[in-house]
Amino acid sequence: MKLSLSRDLEEISRIVAATRTWFAEQHVSNSLMFPVDLATEELFVNMIRHNPDKPDKITLQMDTVEHGVAVQLTDYDVERFDPRSAPTPDTSAPASERAIGGLGLHLVANVVTALDYDYRNRTSTVRFIALENDHRV
Image 1: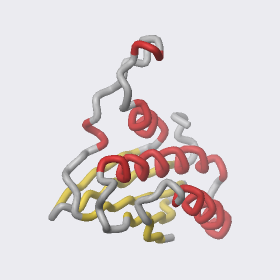
Image 2: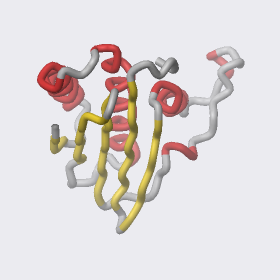
Image 3: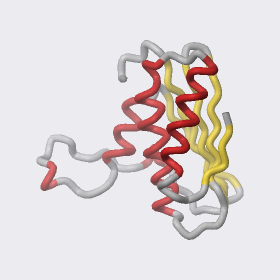
Image 4: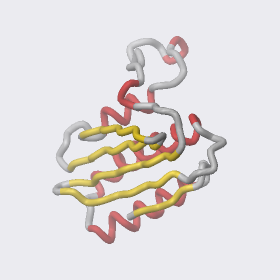
């Protein structure tokens, strides 16, 4: 599956609908729906938040891999931001005392099997893999 997405939060409903259809067509286990939805939505929202005024669309691609799903989000003409380098939030502190930001990326890193990042020629590409029977999810 490949989608070209506008920098608009309204696109999330389109992502969810397309993912549901694609999972059914590809016979992907529904147990992967939560980690794929969470990671895709969080990474997409971060791309919009950090580069809201860019005219280029964000590309979302999903492919099946053995026992799972590989997802790639590509953002064009942007500054480098590796989501793996985000500081780990202090989840032991009460919510009222925590710094804002970072929890979503922390959750992504903890629900997917693998998370990778590439940056070349002002193009940012985030890839993740979610596998069945990965007990993180």
